[in-house]
Amino acid sequence: MKNKSGFTLVELLAIIIILGIITALAAPNIIKLFTSNKTTLYCTKITTLETDAIKWGEDNLGLLPTISGSETYNSVDFTIKVQRLIDEGATKPDDRELNLILDPRDDTSLNDVEIKVYLKNNKVYAKIPSAIEICE
Image (cartoon, rainbow, N blue to C red):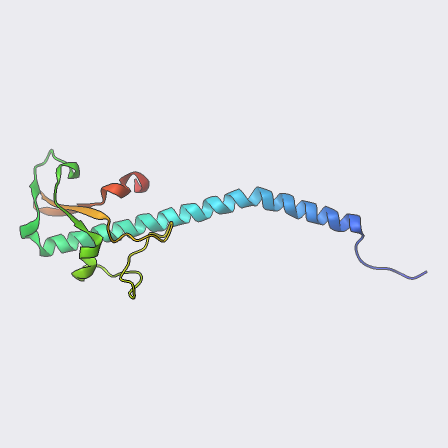
């Protein structure tokens, strides 16, 4: 009798089923991890844009409104768009060819996002209202 080596069809099917179960259990966690990482990257990008807007505001103090101690950024009417920060060299685009800053969650442009920049207690502040719920 010849000595046969290898797996039987039943053993192969069992391995495929086990791998399928492991994949089905792991997939949601992997997807959740990717989504979480993209949101974290988005919030980091928002913080960088706010920091760049503060630096821009420090260079353009005469344009900024001043708010009192009890007021919040919600009362500020003055906004600048991310595109203006790019145009004035206050921030650098992700895609230099297209001059765009991209949202890492879905690769859409953030150039039209408005940033509220204001002066409070002789200090420049910047907030992106559309990102507050996501990043806080």
